[in-house]
Amino acid sequence: MASRDFSHRLSDAHGSLRKPVSLARRLHIDVPLLVLLLVLASVGLGVLYSASGGDMNYVRRQSIFMCLAFTGMFIVAQIPLDFYRRWSPWAYLGGCALLVGVLLFGTGAKGAQRWLEVAGFRFQPSEVMKLGVPMMVAAFLHQRAQPPSLMTVAGALAIVAVPAALIVRQPDLGTSILIAASGLFALYLAGLSWKLIGAAAMGVLVSAWPIWQWGLRDYQRQRILTLLNPNDDRFGAGWNIFNSKAAIGSGGIYGKGYLQGTQSQLDFLPESHTDFIIAVLAEEWGMRGALLLLLLYVLVIARGIYISFMAQHLFGRLLAGSITLTFFVYVFVNIGMVTGLLPVVGVPLPVISYGGTSLITLMAGFGILMAVGTERRRVHF
Image (cartoon, rainbow, N blue to C red; front, top):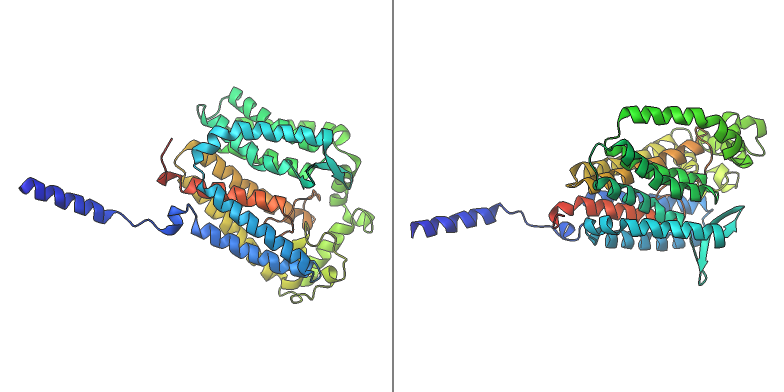
């Protein structure tokens, strides 16, 4: 009788220690990350309205894209992480096949052949590889001893090199850099030795001249020369950088006021609703507005790093870390090229710039982050 009472008390005490599972946890949603992304999306719509000259058509279309992107993020977050690990080779191979299809049958615009058109619907297969490459590298490293051996490193580099080379052929240097970075980040997080990193850096330095001479197209070399001296051709190749820096500088600390930016409203600023949209924000809201936007990005990146750190398995840790660091590269490259610190490579500002395919892919990546963050409450593999 006494033992039965003791067992009942023990079970009751154990049950009282269980924390109630919140709705967010049941839906596998990371609330801090979701709130930050919603704030970024709201800021993006406000800046887009100004950058497009008050054209509500842009805002409506971007709102639809955002609804689709957040819905996709929610769906992706529900899928167990084991599914991504097992199916990553097929996603990778399918993405490479689509990239080959772009070179053979793709449609082009402005001298680039980057899209496939099926039944009147046009999409950019390189966006698939922004998730396919880090998933494949993480799955490849998950099955091998850590830190990675020289043969493992060579295999991971081959996985990264194939789609990156196919995308460079389109040509789309900016996207190829992002995709290569996503795979290399997974390799670095797996414990890549500093000796190999140093050897790779030396290899890049040695190959710089051959790449400049034979690996780059004329317009790509011109972009680098413009970066070094934009005033040489202010009304030609340097036009974008000159006007973006003028817009940012004229905003000062407090900005000119919403819808009051002269560079953007008078169409001096090129691609103001896509690649150069942060110049619109800086001109109208000044340095304080730009710093607040950067703070939001820092908080998103910090949350992603936390999720990666708390991941229960190597695959999830590598995948979450590479997605987060690739997001950082998005922000860094876009702001760097708009401020004249990096060549213009056509990388949009995440969540803020106008565009559907890149936004949906980006939010799918955040859905995977949420799946990683809730994996410890699933059945482990």
